[in-house]
Amino acid sequence: MYIYLIMITLKIFLNVGFSINDVVVKWGMDKKVVRNLLKEKFRISDKSNNVTMNDNDVKLKEHVDEVFKQEFGESLEDWLAKNVTKDLKLEKTNLDEYKNYDNSQNFFHIEYDEKDTLMGIRVHQGIIISIENTTFSFKDDIQKVKKLLSKFSSQVVKTGNYRYEYDDLKIIIADENAMGGEENNTKLSLFCFSSK
Image (spheres, rainbow, N blue to C red):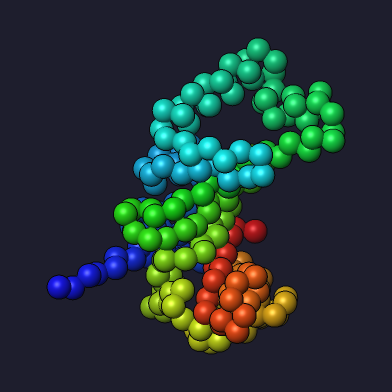
């Protein structure tokens, strides 16, 4: 008996965006459009909100936001920031968290800017990453990934133990050590790609 572990693929399109299992999203796309294209449950990820949302939840939240804007002329988050004690430090939600996307074992965040437009992806596990004809995964050692990325850029800056930034590619990679995981585990543990 064979057990196959199916992994999804993240294809990187430098300076354009990315695709997840052939679902293409481009920098600057509206949050609602991205969520609709990905067609999966996600969790709004921030310090104050840990709610798993389905399509109906998102539609209800969007409806409440729209009514609030019509009634008060600004978003609920903006109104709270102006009118609620600053000690609460309410943060606008900018990350959607996906676990086990497309029935595969993985974990990643989609990041949006203050205008709710797509600006990045943070992958933590279970995804094959492809840039042109170069492929790597979270089973690979950070030094191997660094060497593979050197095909696209020699402008790498070490920003901590086993954490590297490629400013021209807008990519950050880190291993388990850098992420506070197992000591001496140098497997890729974080891959970030952004528009900025």
